[in-house]
Amino acid sequence: MEGTEICGHYKKKELLETVSMLERANDAIVKSVKENSDSVADALVSCQETAILLGTHIESMGDKYAGLVKLLEDYCENIFMMSEAVPDETQCRRVAKKIQKQLNKIRHGIVYDMPDDRKEIVFLPYKASMWDSLESVWKAADADPDCDAYVIPIPYFDKNPNGSFKQEHYEGNLYPKDVPITRYDEYDLEARHPDVIYIHNPYDECNHVTSVHPYFYSKNLRNFTEKLVYIPYFILREINPDDQVAVDGMKHFCFLPGTIYAHQVIVQSENMRLIYISEYIKAAKEMGLSGEHTDRRFLEKKFLGTGSPKIDKVLNTKKEDLEIPAEWLRVIEKPDGSWKKIIFYNTSVSALLQHSEEMLKKMESVFGIFKKNKDEIALLWRPHPLIQATIESMRPQLWAAYKEIREGYIEEGWGIYDDTADLDRAVVLSDAYYGSESSVVELCQMAGLPILIHNVWV
Image (tube, rainbow, N blue to C red; front, side, top):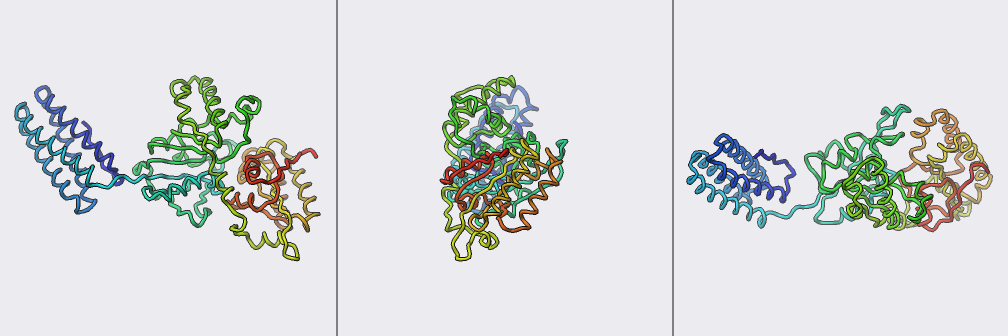
């Protein structure tokens, strides 16, 4: 039997598992006492070391557990007596009965005298603007009196065109004021082994533009918890599972490291769940995988279609509760104090990648039209938060022109430039959506906004 290390975050169920292990060792020692004295001696040493570690841990929990500590001390004395009795089988059996009675008392004390385990749940967002994909789950966990919930923003890197890492980012200071933040270097995931870990980044090393720190890849996090849960940071347009053409446009989301290594995946709807399961199985078979990766019954338990926290967030955010910056109000308010119509203008990463220079010309045209109508309409431009990193990595020749357009818009000051982490404020504040096809469209529709998708060629 190998020794067991008792860590600082040892849980009640693990204490009981350790007692069970000592019981099994006790039985095994008696059975093998005549056959292999050296093996028995090693097992007794291991039992004693484990009991000492267990006793030290329980002693650190306070004087009220002194009785349990005394039982463990007596257990260690009997382990010594057992070692003295080897290889006398009859004498060893007598000592083994005493040991089992002590272990029964230790188990009883742990079960009835110690408080039940509190759940420890960790949330690992990386971009603050994507926090809404986890927020309602965190709020429920935080409100649970039997749960300790930790929000631990993790660092991420922009990538060079060759895939190597460049600038590191950490956005722990950008989260809402009511969210207590724990630094990633102050929480030892491996030692604490939380009950559940939630993530919203599915890509691991597969993203061409950014990467979370490799320590936080899903294939590594899976080792640090009993339950790794992936919730997508995006909302997709709802489609019929039988519409294979539409499914082909989003199936790449279904088989990624996050969906592969997570113990559970939560998506926005039941239809989307059916799509994820079917496309996951297809991709797994193409990769030559088998077992749980192609077992539909297993995957039907792994994938849940219970909804997205992003929808919860936007539906529960009220316009009257928003904190609106003074510089935004100068754009929104008319001279008489009434408000202009606010148009949410969204430029997506995919539109820039697909249309390049034509998309830049479209943006200039859009800004020109809205500038002429600025007395009646307030334009709220919110580009995708990864646009700069994407252009620099995948379309570096566009960066100078894009930067000039962006800086010109900001400097002129007739419209709002929103690069904050609060997407939901922009959605709730706006009267209509205009711009690229994007996951934001689905969110705006949920909020009841009229939608107009721009045509790059018009």
